[in-house]
Image 1: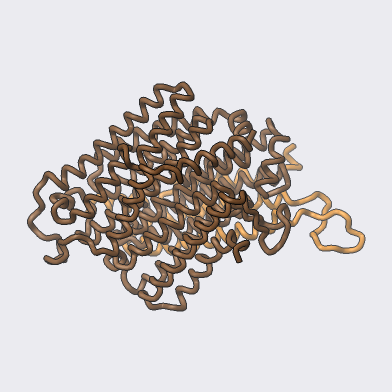
Image 2: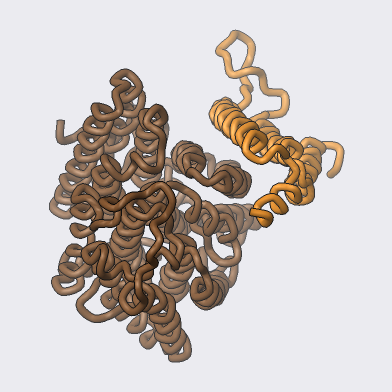
Length: 498
Length: 116
């Protein structure tokens, strides 16, 4: 049983999805989905434990040996990312029990849970597999599910956003497919381990660098690196709030994982930096992303949109970490990947609570909210502080390592710019704090909502939010898990690539 | 160079045509047709990769010693299925967009969003 964990990680949500359709009573389906997500969380914890004790796990699908059959390969990096993905998925789905009723009509909820589980299966599959074509298949499973999830939004603009994301996402995935084709024609293998062994032989070949460029551009479209981010703000703003919480904390993180995996494990640092000036490009685009997105975020009236732009800025930080090309830079990226999932998960769940009570995430809805929904607002404030990078929150840990990496690389201006970027975050978080604590509440009731609706959010929404907030603080103080794991992963990736 | 590798030139031509349509067209359905062309060009690229000149279909038979590589062909079967799923989902979205907005032209969609 235990030796089958790598495949169970993907198969549990994949099979749970059609099983939901058989249950067909939304309450029952919800309980079932919570169980399925909880089970995958349990599996990913077990996997992380096994991997940290016994090293990399390799699983041959259907008993076919690795280079011929499909191999699932769980190393420390995959186990670490799977823990984030399944953890967030579980918390969001717990919150969905009540949070969903105002956002998705009852008769569509069963299908929603099916799509949600498929999306989770796709994301976990990308992380688990050691076969590069399998990555493409899982990427498309998760992407197709994501387009559908976004289209559940109440606003009709959600449909339009989903369509735009579909076009961009498909182009990105097709780029990756082209890259895989070039790699296959060059090396005759699809297994990542085999690829890593054979690519150095063809260093300097134009086919290899073309493949690399296609794959990097395709993945960067998926992770919304500036200036390929245009699909993201609308998709996040108009999707149902809980979907936004799930996607913001997992989908882009898995894309960052994919970039790290392909860059460092498959192509190797040496190839990547010698075939094109990737470091410079990533540093520049990352920094540009931080500044442009943060500046745009400051002027957004819709808070969901504000945090969507802030997500683009935070992805910029992750890309800067990769751009240094050093172990400590990569460690900063991995830390921020984990930490950003925690803070954005908490923030968007809290926003879901606000939307649940007030039906809107506009800045005007936040006036005086500090008194009416104190717990929700406190969660947003702590999440915001973490976003800024205050000490005692996880945000500080990743920013700290990012600055260390910049100093180690001798790039003082970059360190300075990272700090300046954080100040921009102070500005957009402060707008929210000001509205919530220093402005009187609006007197007239929003349409369709009566007195009792103006209280604190229900516990089922608050508990998952606060769990994430507490993890934010706990891992900001006791950093052994994240710093230890990410440090080990970073040195393994850079050591193995050379 | 051109005659032996003509299928790759077809790939490039189709890919660029499809990509251009996706970028330039304002009609959502036509955009999808462009996207399909773009994807199809990659299918042809893979199929060309797997073809061994003079090779037969990869079925064991007497008197045949050279076979085409079946793996890219199998991969592309999967990619075709993915492409169909994408197109189906996109068309479903377009139907719902038309129901919600009453149009499938990009410019009119933007205008109607600005109005409200």
